[in-house]
Length: 198
Ligand code: AMP
View 1 (spheres, rainbow, N blue to C red):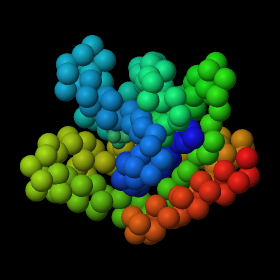
View 2: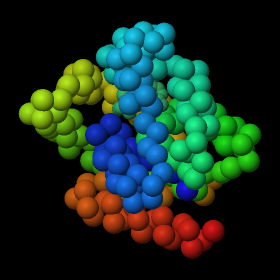
View 3: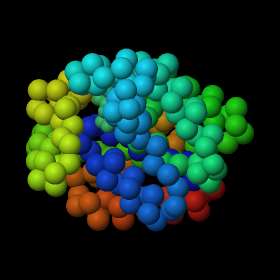
């Protein structure tokens, strides 16, 4: 199963991806996590990405496309994967198409978590507080000022992907404002329906 989770920052993509990993035994490919790991490790990619990420802007398509292309060839992706936070631009969406078709595989479903923007800043602030309380590092971009920029980037560059996937008949929407369990249940319903339709 190859899935894309779409939605603005704070919509719950990461949380739901984790649950899908547990249930379906396929990996979560989060470009945000991969880029943070690169920053942490001080690689060339990490050095180039750091300032852009701290400002809440998007890292270049070339960098993220290369990271994902390499990742999906790893053995744990053979049965499928969940793309979380990727693609984020139309150029990236086209890159996914090419990557998959070159490998003779396709995309099953794109699930958009639909949320109320006004709730998102609160979620991000809570995520930062929870990380701090758990003694984990707090993401530098999880603060209200940078969040505004991340949301602007989302509307400018990522939101058009809903139309892109709708036109391809791949888009399914889920109410991301429901409880975490209810969102999980709705996603499972969407996946079951999609599997039956295949
Ligand atoms: P995330 O953890 O998905 O919220 O991503 C954190 C940050 O990493 C974003 O604000 C971007 O700076 C960068 N990033 C993650 N995924 C992408 C992507 N697909 N394209 C460009 N930048 C990305």
